[in-house]
Picture 1 (cartoon, rainbow over the protein chains, first blue to last red):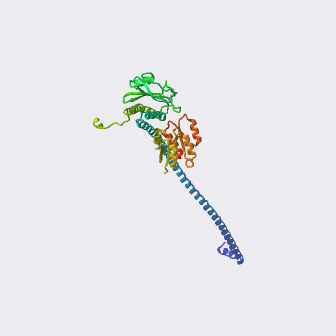
Picture 2 (cartoon, each protein chain N blue to C red; picture 1 turned 90 degrees about the vertical axis):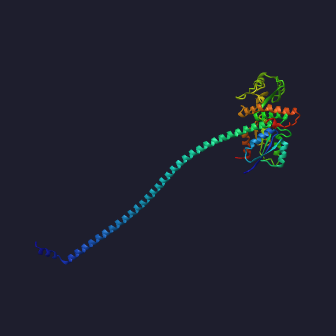
Length: 282
Length: 125
Protein backbone atom coordinates (compact mmCIF):
# COMPACT_ATOMS: atom_id res chain seq x y z
CA UNK A 1 0.00 0.00 0.00
CA UNK A 2 1.31 3.44 -0.89
CA UNK A 3 1.38 6.56 1.27
CA UNK A 4 -1.17 8.11 -0.85
CA UNK A 5 -3.57 5.24 -0.35
CA UNK A 6 -2.99 5.32 3.40
CA UNK A 7 -3.81 9.01 3.63
CA UNK A 8 -6.90 8.53 1.73
CA UNK A 9 -8.06 5.85 4.05
CA UNK A 10 -7.80 8.12 7.10
CA UNK A 11 -9.34 10.96 5.49
CA UNK A 12 -11.95 8.74 4.18
CA UNK A 13 -13.65 8.63 7.64
CA UNK A 14 -16.40 11.15 7.96
CA UNK A 15 -15.78 14.23 9.95
CA UNK A 16 -18.67 13.65 12.28
CA UNK A 17 -17.32 10.34 13.25
CA UNK A 18 -13.98 11.86 13.91
CA UNK A 19 -15.56 14.54 16.05
CA UNK A 20 -17.51 11.97 17.98
CA UNK A 21 -14.41 9.95 18.46
CA UNK A 22 -12.59 13.01 19.65
CA UNK A 23 -15.40 13.87 22.05
CA UNK A 24 -15.39 10.38 23.42
CA UNK A 25 -11.69 10.51 23.83
CA UNK A 26 -11.84 13.86 25.60
CA UNK A 27 -14.65 12.72 27.87
CA UNK A 28 -12.84 9.53 28.68
CA UNK A 29 -9.68 11.49 29.30
CA UNK A 30 -11.43 13.97 31.51
CA UNK A 31 -13.27 11.26 33.45
CA UNK A 32 -10.03 9.50 34.04
CA UNK A 33 -8.52 12.83 35.11
CA UNK A 34 -11.38 13.40 37.56
CA UNK A 35 -11.12 9.85 38.79
CA UNK A 36 -7.36 10.23 39.20
CA UNK A 37 -7.81 13.55 41.01
CA UNK A 38 -10.39 12.01 43.34
CA UNK A 39 -8.05 9.18 44.05
CA UNK A 40 -5.27 11.66 44.73
CA UNK A 41 -7.49 13.66 47.10
CA UNK A 42 -8.56 10.48 48.87
CA UNK A 43 -4.97 9.32 49.12
CA UNK A 44 -3.96 12.73 50.44
CA UNK A 45 -6.66 12.58 53.06
CA UNK A 46 -5.50 9.16 54.16
CA UNK A 47 -1.92 10.34 54.30
CA UNK A 48 -2.92 13.32 56.42
CA UNK A 49 -4.76 11.06 58.79
CA UNK A 50 -1.79 8.76 59.00
CA UNK A 51 0.49 11.74 59.58
CA UNK A 52 -1.74 12.94 62.40
CA UNK A 53 -1.66 9.47 63.92
CA UNK A 54 2.10 9.33 63.64
CA UNK A 55 2.44 12.76 65.17
CA UNK A 56 0.22 11.70 68.04
CA UNK A 57 2.26 8.54 68.50
CA UNK A 58 5.42 10.57 68.33
CA UNK A 59 4.14 12.90 71.07
CA UNK A 60 3.21 9.94 73.23
CA UNK A 61 6.63 8.38 72.72
CA UNK A 62 8.33 11.67 73.49
CA UNK A 63 6.33 11.97 76.72
CA UNK A 64 7.21 8.39 77.62
CA UNK A 65 10.89 9.00 76.98
CA UNK A 66 10.70 12.14 79.11
CA UNK A 67 8.94 10.16 81.82
CA UNK A 68 11.61 7.44 81.65
CA UNK A 69 14.29 10.10 82.01
CA UNK A 70 12.52 11.48 85.07
CA UNK A 71 12.32 7.96 86.50
CA UNK A 72 16.00 7.43 85.80
CA UNK A 73 16.75 10.73 87.57
CA UNK A 74 14.60 9.71 90.48
CA UNK A 75 16.31 6.33 90.67
CA UNK A 76 19.64 8.10 90.71
CA UNK A 77 18.42 10.35 93.50
CA UNK A 78 17.10 7.33 95.42
CA UNK A 79 20.51 5.67 95.08
CA UNK A 80 22.24 8.81 96.30
CA UNK A 81 19.80 9.12 99.20
CA UNK A 82 20.27 5.46 100.08
CA UNK A 83 24.03 5.99 100.20
CA UNK A 84 23.54 9.10 102.33
CA UNK A 85 21.23 7.15 104.60
CA UNK A 86 23.85 4.43 105.10
CA UNK A 87 26.47 7.10 105.84
CA UNK A 88 24.16 8.87 108.27
CA UNK A 89 23.22 5.61 109.99
CA UNK A 90 26.87 4.75 110.38
CA UNK A 91 27.55 8.23 111.75
CA UNK A 92 24.54 7.95 114.03
CA UNK A 93 25.83 4.64 115.40
CA UNK A 94 29.22 6.23 116.00
CA UNK A 95 27.59 9.15 117.81
CA UNK A 96 25.40 6.74 119.78
CA UNK A 97 28.45 4.76 120.85
CA UNK A 98 30.29 7.97 121.79
CA UNK A 99 27.23 9.21 123.65
CA UNK A 100 26.98 5.92 125.51
CA UNK A 101 30.67 6.14 126.42
CA UNK A 102 30.19 9.71 127.62
CA UNK A 103 27.10 8.64 129.56
CA UNK A 104 29.05 5.88 131.28
CA UNK A 105 31.90 8.24 132.06
CA UNK A 106 29.43 10.84 133.32
CA UNK A 107 27.83 8.32 135.68
CA UNK A 108 31.26 7.17 136.79
CA UNK A 109 32.31 10.75 137.56
CA UNK A 110 28.98 11.39 139.28
CA UNK A 111 29.56 8.30 141.42
CA UNK A 112 33.10 9.41 142.23
CA UNK A 113 31.84 12.87 143.16
CA UNK A 114 29.20 11.35 145.44
CA UNK A 115 31.85 9.15 147.08
CA UNK A 116 34.20 12.09 147.55
CA UNK A 117 31.34 14.11 148.99
CA UNK A 118 30.66 11.29 151.48
CA UNK A 119 34.32 11.22 152.50
CA UNK A 120 34.49 14.99 152.78
CA UNK A 121 31.36 15.12 154.91
CA UNK A 122 32.57 12.29 157.14
CA UNK A 123 35.93 14.00 157.69
CA UNK A 124 34.29 17.37 158.16
CA UNK A 125 31.84 16.00 160.72
CA UNK A 126 34.45 13.99 162.61
CA UNK A 127 36.67 17.01 163.12
CA UNK A 128 33.87 19.54 163.40
CA UNK A 129 33.50 19.31 167.15
CA UNK A 130 35.71 19.27 170.25
CA UNK A 131 32.99 17.71 172.37
CA UNK A 132 33.48 14.00 173.11
CA UNK A 133 29.72 13.46 173.16
CA UNK A 134 29.19 15.17 169.80
CA UNK A 135 32.12 13.36 168.23
CA UNK A 136 30.74 10.01 169.43
CA UNK A 137 27.31 10.95 168.07
CA UNK A 138 28.83 11.80 164.73
CA UNK A 139 30.74 8.53 164.55
CA UNK A 140 27.44 6.78 165.21
CA UNK A 141 25.68 8.81 162.50
CA UNK A 142 28.46 8.20 160.07
CA UNK A 143 28.22 4.46 160.57
CA UNK A 144 24.44 4.35 160.42
CA UNK A 145 23.67 7.01 157.83
CA UNK A 146 26.60 6.81 155.43
CA UNK A 147 27.65 3.16 155.60
CA UNK A 148 24.33 1.59 156.58
CA UNK A 149 25.47 -0.21 159.72
CA UNK A 150 22.85 -1.78 161.95
CA UNK A 151 24.91 -2.83 164.97
CA UNK A 152 28.41 -1.83 166.00
CA UNK A 153 30.69 -0.95 168.89
CA UNK A 154 33.70 1.31 169.31
CA UNK A 155 36.31 0.10 171.78
CA UNK A 156 39.11 2.29 173.12
CA UNK A 157 42.16 1.01 174.93
CA UNK A 158 42.37 1.56 178.66
CA UNK A 159 45.22 3.70 179.98
CA UNK A 160 47.31 0.60 180.74
CA UNK A 161 46.49 -0.90 177.36
CA UNK A 162 45.37 -4.19 178.87
CA UNK A 163 41.69 -3.92 178.06
CA UNK A 164 39.43 -2.48 175.42
CA UNK A 165 36.50 -0.48 176.75
CA UNK A 166 33.35 0.09 174.69
CA UNK A 167 32.70 3.84 174.47
CA UNK A 168 29.96 3.76 171.84
CA UNK A 169 27.57 1.17 170.46
CA UNK A 170 24.39 0.92 168.47
CA UNK A 171 21.84 -1.70 167.53
CA UNK A 172 23.09 -4.25 170.07
CA UNK A 173 20.37 -3.88 172.69
CA UNK A 174 20.84 -4.56 176.35
CA UNK A 175 23.11 -5.52 177.85
CA UNK A 176 25.48 -3.60 175.66
CA UNK A 177 29.05 -4.60 174.85
CA UNK A 178 31.34 -5.27 177.76
CA UNK A 179 35.07 -4.48 178.16
CA UNK A 180 37.29 -7.14 176.71
CA UNK A 181 40.85 -8.16 177.39
CA UNK A 182 43.22 -6.78 174.81
CA UNK A 183 44.48 -9.52 172.51
CA UNK A 184 41.33 -11.51 173.27
CA UNK A 185 39.36 -12.81 170.29
CA UNK A 186 39.07 -11.16 166.92
CA UNK A 187 38.80 -7.65 168.33
CA UNK A 188 41.91 -8.15 170.46
CA UNK A 189 43.76 -9.57 167.48
CA UNK A 190 43.01 -6.48 165.39
CA UNK A 191 44.06 -4.25 168.30
CA UNK A 192 47.41 -6.01 168.67
CA UNK A 193 48.17 -6.53 164.96
CA UNK A 194 46.67 -3.27 163.57
CA UNK A 195 45.37 -5.34 160.65
CA UNK A 196 41.93 -4.46 159.30
CA UNK A 197 39.47 -7.30 158.75
CA UNK A 198 36.50 -6.55 156.46
CA UNK A 199 34.02 -8.91 154.85
CA UNK A 200 34.58 -8.42 151.12
CA UNK A 201 31.98 -10.81 149.78
CA UNK A 202 28.21 -10.97 150.20
CA UNK A 203 27.28 -9.71 153.64
CA UNK A 204 26.08 -12.54 155.79
CA UNK A 205 23.99 -11.98 158.89
CA UNK A 206 26.74 -10.76 161.19
CA UNK A 207 26.79 -10.98 164.97
CA UNK A 208 28.84 -9.85 167.95
CA UNK A 209 30.74 -13.12 167.81
CA UNK A 210 31.20 -12.98 164.03
CA UNK A 211 31.62 -9.30 163.09
CA UNK A 212 31.50 -8.11 159.47
CA UNK A 213 34.34 -5.66 159.93
CA UNK A 214 37.02 -4.91 162.48
CA UNK A 215 38.97 -1.69 161.96
CA UNK A 216 41.89 -0.56 164.16
CA UNK A 217 41.52 3.04 165.31
CA UNK A 218 44.89 4.74 165.03
CA UNK A 219 46.45 7.99 166.14
CA UNK A 220 49.37 8.33 163.83
CA UNK A 221 50.87 4.80 163.99
CA UNK A 222 49.58 3.87 167.42
CA UNK A 223 46.44 1.74 167.73
CA UNK A 224 44.14 3.28 170.37
CA UNK A 225 41.04 1.19 169.81
CA UNK A 226 38.93 -0.93 167.48
CA UNK A 227 35.75 -0.29 165.53
CA UNK A 228 33.65 -3.44 165.29
CA UNK A 229 30.76 -3.66 162.80
CA UNK A 230 28.51 -6.57 163.67
CA UNK A 231 25.67 -6.28 161.16
CA UNK A 232 24.46 -4.10 158.30
CA UNK A 233 21.04 -2.96 157.14
CA UNK A 234 19.00 -5.59 155.30
CA UNK A 235 19.21 -3.85 151.91
CA UNK A 236 22.99 -3.83 152.05
CA UNK A 237 24.23 -6.89 150.21
CA UNK A 238 27.90 -5.86 149.94
CA UNK A 239 30.21 -3.24 151.33
CA UNK A 240 30.78 -0.83 148.47
CA UNK A 241 34.13 0.80 147.59
CA UNK A 242 33.10 4.00 149.35
CA UNK A 243 32.32 1.97 152.50
CA UNK A 244 35.89 0.68 152.56
CA UNK A 245 37.12 4.24 152.18
CA UNK A 246 34.83 5.44 154.98
CA UNK A 247 36.05 2.67 157.28
CA UNK A 248 39.64 3.57 156.42
CA UNK A 249 38.86 7.20 157.22
CA UNK A 250 37.27 6.21 160.53
CA UNK A 251 40.34 4.13 161.32
CA UNK A 252 42.67 7.06 160.85
CA UNK A 253 40.45 9.94 162.05
CA UNK A 254 37.94 8.69 164.63
CA UNK A 255 40.55 7.94 167.27
CA UNK A 256 42.26 11.25 166.62
CA UNK A 257 38.99 13.20 166.82
CA UNK A 258 38.09 11.49 170.09
CA UNK A 259 41.56 12.10 171.52
CA UNK A 260 41.42 15.81 170.62
CA UNK A 261 37.96 16.16 172.13
CA UNK A 262 39.05 14.36 175.28
CA UNK A 263 42.20 16.47 175.66
CA UNK A 264 40.13 19.61 175.16
CA UNK A 265 37.75 18.48 177.90
CA UNK A 266 40.72 17.63 180.15
CA UNK A 267 42.08 21.17 179.88
CA UNK A 268 38.70 22.56 180.83
CA UNK A 269 37.60 23.56 177.31
CA UNK A 270 40.21 26.28 177.21
CA UNK A 271 41.68 27.31 173.89
CA UNK A 272 45.43 26.78 173.87
CA UNK A 273 47.79 29.66 173.34
CA UNK A 274 49.42 29.76 169.95
CA UNK A 275 52.03 32.27 171.03
CA UNK A 276 55.44 31.26 169.81
CA UNK A 277 54.07 28.42 167.70
CA UNK A 278 55.92 29.71 164.64
CA UNK A 279 59.31 29.96 166.33
CA UNK A 280 58.90 26.51 167.96
CA UNK A 281 58.30 24.92 164.58
CA UNK A 282 60.75 26.83 162.45
CA UNK B 1 15.64 29.19 133.19
CA UNK B 2 13.29 28.33 136.03
CA UNK B 3 14.63 28.41 139.55
CA UNK B 4 13.50 25.87 142.10
CA UNK B 5 13.54 25.90 145.86
CA UNK B 6 13.89 22.97 148.21
CA UNK B 7 13.35 22.70 151.95
CA UNK B 8 15.35 20.00 153.73
CA UNK B 9 13.96 19.06 157.14
CA UNK B 10 16.51 16.84 158.86
CA UNK B 11 17.89 16.84 162.41
CA UNK B 12 21.22 15.24 161.50
CA UNK B 13 23.77 17.83 160.30
CA UNK B 14 25.61 15.03 158.50
CA UNK B 15 22.52 14.04 156.52
CA UNK B 16 21.71 17.66 155.76
CA UNK B 17 25.23 18.19 154.47
CA UNK B 18 25.01 15.02 152.40
CA UNK B 19 21.68 16.11 150.89
CA UNK B 20 22.99 19.60 150.16
CA UNK B 21 26.02 18.12 148.39
CA UNK B 22 23.80 15.84 146.34
CA UNK B 23 21.33 18.59 145.45
CA UNK B 24 24.13 20.92 144.40
CA UNK B 25 24.18 18.75 141.26
CA UNK B 26 20.64 19.90 140.37
CA UNK B 27 20.84 23.14 138.43
CA UNK B 28 19.01 26.20 139.72
CA UNK B 29 17.92 24.53 142.92
CA UNK B 30 18.12 26.71 146.01
CA UNK B 31 18.21 24.73 149.26
CA UNK B 32 16.99 25.83 152.70
CA UNK B 33 17.65 23.78 155.84
CA UNK B 34 15.47 23.11 158.86
CA UNK B 35 16.49 21.16 161.99
CA UNK B 36 13.13 19.52 162.70
CA UNK B 37 9.43 19.62 161.91
CA UNK B 38 8.73 22.80 163.88
CA UNK B 39 11.63 24.61 162.26
CA UNK B 40 10.35 23.32 158.92
CA UNK B 41 6.87 24.74 159.53
CA UNK B 42 8.44 28.04 160.53
CA UNK B 43 10.31 28.18 157.24
CA UNK B 44 7.16 27.19 155.33
CA UNK B 45 5.23 30.03 156.96
CA UNK B 46 7.51 32.60 155.42
CA UNK B 47 8.21 31.15 151.98
CA UNK B 48 6.95 28.77 149.34
CA UNK B 49 9.03 25.79 148.23
CA UNK B 50 8.88 23.64 145.12
CA UNK B 51 9.79 20.49 147.02
CA UNK B 52 10.17 19.37 150.64
CA UNK B 53 12.55 16.60 151.73
CA UNK B 54 12.03 15.41 155.26
CA UNK B 55 13.36 12.76 157.57
CA UNK B 56 10.79 10.76 159.53
CA UNK B 57 12.54 10.36 162.87
CA UNK B 58 13.22 13.79 164.33
CA UNK B 59 12.91 15.35 167.78
CA UNK B 60 10.25 17.95 168.65
CA UNK B 61 8.12 17.26 165.55
CA UNK B 62 8.66 14.19 163.39
CA UNK B 63 8.30 13.92 159.64
CA UNK B 64 4.86 12.29 159.75
CA UNK B 65 3.37 15.22 161.64
CA UNK B 66 5.06 17.60 159.27
CA UNK B 67 3.58 15.83 156.22
CA UNK B 68 0.14 15.97 157.81
CA UNK B 69 0.45 19.69 158.60
CA UNK B 70 1.75 20.53 155.13
CA UNK B 71 -1.06 18.64 153.40
CA UNK B 72 -3.68 20.46 155.47
CA UNK B 73 -2.22 23.85 154.59
CA UNK B 74 -3.87 25.30 151.46
CA UNK B 75 -0.69 27.17 150.54
CA UNK B 76 1.57 24.09 150.55
CA UNK B 77 -0.83 21.19 150.06
CA UNK B 78 0.32 20.61 146.47
CA UNK B 79 4.05 20.82 147.21
CA UNK B 80 5.80 17.50 146.48
CA UNK B 81 7.19 15.83 149.60
CA UNK B 82 9.93 13.23 149.64
CA UNK B 83 10.57 11.35 152.87
CA UNK B 84 13.77 9.72 154.08
CA UNK B 85 13.33 6.44 155.91
CA UNK B 86 15.33 3.48 157.11
CA UNK B 87 14.61 0.07 155.66
CA UNK B 88 13.11 -1.12 158.94
CA UNK B 89 10.44 1.57 159.09
CA UNK B 90 8.01 0.31 156.47
CA UNK B 91 5.02 1.28 158.60
CA UNK B 92 6.26 4.87 158.84
CA UNK B 93 6.82 4.91 155.09
CA UNK B 94 3.32 3.63 154.37
CA UNK B 95 1.85 6.08 156.85
CA UNK B 96 3.74 8.98 155.26
CA UNK B 97 2.57 8.01 151.78
CA UNK B 98 -1.00 7.73 153.05
CA UNK B 99 -0.70 11.19 154.59
CA UNK B 100 0.30 12.59 151.22
CA UNK B 101 4.05 12.17 150.77
CA UNK B 102 4.91 11.68 147.11
CA UNK B 103 8.10 9.61 147.25
CA UNK B 104 10.63 8.11 149.61
CA UNK B 105 14.29 7.20 149.71
CA UNK B 106 15.91 4.74 152.05
CA UNK B 107 19.05 5.23 154.11
CA UNK B 108 21.94 5.04 153.52
CA UNK B 109 21.11 7.51 150.77
CA UNK B 110 22.92 7.56 147.44
CA UNK B 111 23.38 10.96 145.79
CA UNK B 112 22.36 9.79 142.27
CA UNK B 113 19.16 8.32 143.72
CA UNK B 114 18.31 11.58 145.53
CA UNK B 115 18.99 13.64 142.40
CA UNK B 116 16.84 11.36 140.23
CA UNK B 117 13.88 11.49 142.64
CA UNK B 118 14.05 15.25 143.06
CA UNK B 119 14.22 15.79 139.30
CA UNK B 120 11.27 13.45 138.86
CA UNK B 121 9.17 15.32 141.41
CA UNK B 122 10.14 18.72 140.00
CA UNK B 123 9.61 17.42 136.45
CA UNK B 124 13.08 18.49 135.42
CA UNK B 125 14.58 16.83 132.32
